Length: 211
Image (cartoon, rainbow, N blue to C red; front, side):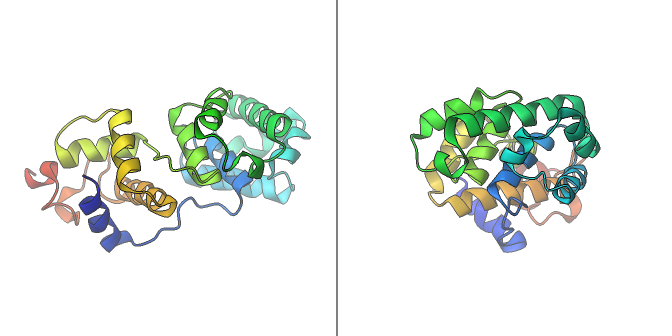
């Protein structure tokens, strides 16, 4: 179902090497901070954390909450996100020691553990599983729901989207890049108010054809 779509997206975007982070710890931090804000605001927060050498989970557990709030202020909702970051970092360190120890474990057990962490919803869990831990989990976000509804002309559930993507793309890199390409498409063309006229998918997209 998604194979041809992937090829069309890839012809335009190529390999985006998504997610934009340098370490697995930084990925987890970004997954929490990106909730309800733009990535530019997250980047500012992460850069500030790096400048203070507080960009790992273990360092977060050692950081005073007031200082953490100040470091991530640009990401918005900093009171809430600082609590989430601290709680997530502490839980991972206490149970697993580090992220590396969470890789190649029982998929369902790791998924259940992450889903139970404070501030972690479906999208955040999927992002951590795929981008920080390299599990074959597809990330379904608002960009994905919006684009696929327009492209195929029907509403898909999270379960349906994940089932199709995870069945068709067995490589971790493909799952990562498919999600990354959809995000970029959502920013460039398939916005809340779509820019169909100049979109390279116009002739393939059910919504675009009718514009």
